[in-house]
Image (cartoon, rainbow over all chains, first blue to last red; front, side, top):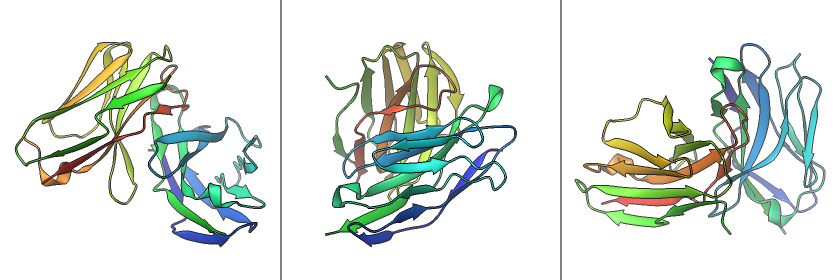
Length: 113
Length: 113
């Protein structure tokens, strides 16, 4: 079945540091890939997505590229802010009969001033 | 206007009680979901409804019963609450099955004493 593995946290960074959160997936066919973010006390919200190989999703300074050859969708941001402190979830949605959204375990990121 | 709203936001109750959580979405979406998030932030899908019909029913104790009176509402009723039911329950909606783009409510934190 489909599954997502993302790097374990927690991750603690200083402001303006570079952030990478690794995400790899296992799926049959060509899934769609997502990053969701959960700010403290809130529900999840979609951060970015990519629906086919080599697509790059981007939003709020975050980027992730769908790499079919390495089955990866790593999240990156060049210069984090305190307001980026949140839990980040990588997710995968399969095709046709296996469209259920599968989430990774989440990575807690704390950015210190 | 909140797109996906859940009530109550907090619920503290004794073991053995029965409780309900309500969810409403005003986005005109066809598909709604219930997710459970444990203390380690792990998200697990419980149920999904599409146009009031149950389409996903994961391995969840039958003490949990979803009800969808119309496609804008998906309520969750829990009988005979147990300590292990303590979690944050998230309602979500999407335009259809398999889009992967879910809109989440703010969550309902259930504490069973």
